[in-house]
Length: 324
Ligand code: NAD
Image (cartoon, rainbow, N blue to C red; front, side, top):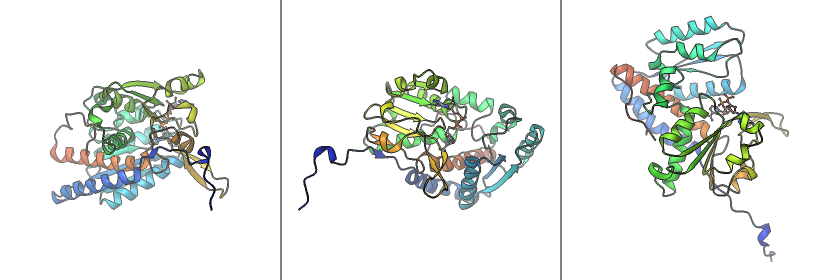
């Protein structure tokens, strides 16, 4: 006869896991239909990536999007350059891809080595092929609420959030209004656009970067979050004491760490998943959260760029909340 379990030995209640693989599979199905419709009009979307150096997460990302482009029968080309390449050579490659009619969208993989100024490279992109909205024109359009492309990682964060809210009986069209979204990390490609997308949804948006951390004030703000988006690139940055009960957490971080047992590299997020899950209403895991959706979204943006090129028209004029 088994002993009755004392209340404090019971499995604690844990938050819902937001499943990025399932969301990505669903989006992938829609996308395959869009690609088929385009190819029926003799038009094949094409993605180009520029990979400078051999940073682990950039290489892994390149491999994933290449596989996805192949699976979707999109044209794919990668320009792999050594880490000591000069900026002028990178700009020349971007110019070549801008002029290539088979290329609809271009992704510059980050980080770039120190001798290359990111802003110079981004400014060189053809805005019509700038699927991550890093060119000043596209970044400006996003800030004004008139995006041509919504950058794939922050778009994926809100896609997962909207999807989860809908599935749990709430309206993503009104849920954020008057609620607090805290975004940790303020990079141009993830944190800042995540702030803008939160503002567009009527949320109270708080932005913290490493300065808030150094001032010892990060927790003061993360604890206010109804929705917490963490994109800092610091493993274990957010623990159970940094969140309030019932928070919804999106962990963007992808950090390669050595696995003590096997000696191999494994990926962890910025959030202490198990500890935070005990307090959260819902949380996205790493891997299997934002990452797989980002991959599909990048190809989705490539298809938008291909359609724009096919029609020679302007991009979507309205602000897509969940564009699918
Ligand atoms: P980044 O290095 O360009 O920017 C990091 C930001 O975090 C900066 O604003 C910095 O000030 C802030 N930060 C650093 N340490 C901090 C701390 N201790 N406390 C608070 N803020 C801190 O990085 P990024 O490109 O924005 O990427 C962030 C993370 O997200 C990385 O782990 C990256 O690998 C991952 N990422 C994931 C995806 C995905 O699809 N899941 C896509 C892009 C990036």
